[in-house]
Image 1 (spheres, one colour):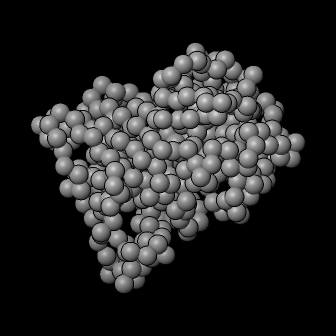
Image 2 (cartoon, one colour):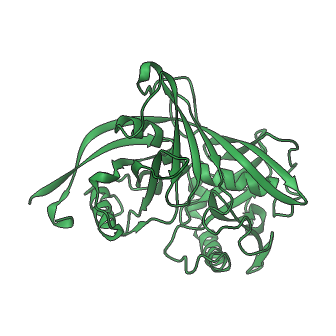
Image 3 (spheres, helix red, strand yellow):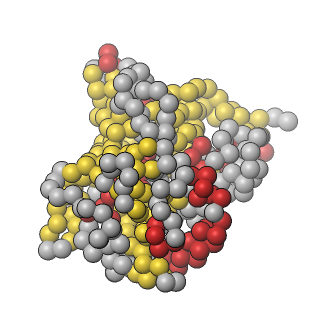
Length: 361
């Protein structure tokens, strides 16, 4: 069987992994792109044995990069979530962990020019319209992956990559609170429907009879929780103006609980049909915003920090994630100027990825 070769760089970005493509090496229309990604990742079989997917949502992600026409950004980042057990692709969400590899990958591909010392890569997220500055370590004008930065969920240390998110309120819906309410009651559960970097439906863990400190495995074994949560997420998606979300990973679902290890809060993040092993970057920004904004389900649950900038520390199943918020409360409204997250990335391999020629004639 003849095959078609497509150049790619395989990278770990944050706590996720996947191939990074130069968009010029892929089809132009999304329908054909989806077919190519399904073949490349081996989607449609739970183990993804006929592709390079890792049989989990965090290891079945794709980044597509190109030079940007945006007045501020230099790189366009187009994200795709490829399903494992079914042959489908979702272009609606974004991924802040995969975003951590965009700056290094763009430099490796020659789409961005490295400076001596560190390089600031200005990125436009095509999926959501968000603008992000990635600060990449480039001593001597070359990307370095070695360093002393450590993030929970990844073994060892690596060079730090700082992601500064700007203009992320209303990323998908155009509104901070898309339903017009700070708290909605759906099927007897109080939730906050909020859109900052990623649309989310956020509830208290106690509302589901959970502590919010469960392990990822304990949560995934609790199918009664998912059976209770999913109808709420779907109804919330309708109220948020996202339409029928039964086959979409957006909005994501999150649970809040008091901290137990010195953080600001404990959080659990769902993708949405599996628990995240750590916590998504975009999800951490949205969850932190829910904590800081007045009148949400977080009120009265934890001690809200004062002042700006402020660091929100979210305890997750593998440790914690820290997000620095520069914000203001004006007449009771939450105004986010920027949110910064420390991540790392590593290039795993570069070369040609092969798909059956018939997939993309």
